[in-house]
Length: 301
Image (cartoon, rainbow, N blue to C red; front, side):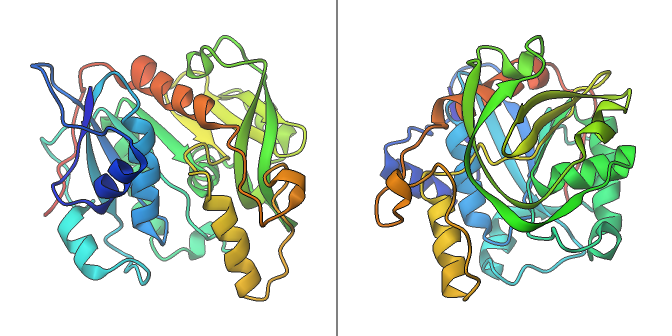
């Protein structure tokens, strides 16, 4: 149907260059209003990745971008933030149906030492009250489960990087409706979970996991929130950019697994995750967000 965003957002131009039809919202139906709390340093890339997926839905979607008020981004132009982003400083009549909270490169930092941790806790509390369903992606998934359920993160010596085969641990969850028995997901992180700690929590269920990458999708048994450790939203060359960036920093990273043909970084990677990424986000919108808004959040301009 179309995605509605603020006029002039660079993501739209980038996606049109890819041949992605974002379009505009048509018809008389009210679009689903999605709040995106973007914690990633290169925000324009993340905006583009998320809008690419949300635009694949048959539902109309309106996206509002947010950033923490207690943190100043050093890697996204201030003018871009001023023009396109709002801050969670006031709540009121402005209604959202769903929320996405992105990852952040803070894996080696204790949650309590993150400069916007207290604000993030308030935002997560607000989402619980006022938003029908929230997707927590990568670092946000670890932060959300730590805050809500005391699930601790495990720091790895080497990075989990690559595209990994996954299975369904719960085929009944609508978030994975239509998924194949085996499907692929990109991962890029230094942290993971103790699977047993999640299995022992009566409030949580593991919906999908990987032998190599570990737990992937965690759902709440009596709620609509989902915690996703992978990066289904990644564009084809995102892992490539991260790998070559780390090489440029002298970090000697391992080559992303199952990504480049013949593990040759000079060859273009083969995309194995596009269809299931779209299905994941479409299922989320269709089954967990597509309902009348129950309350609201009012951003401050």
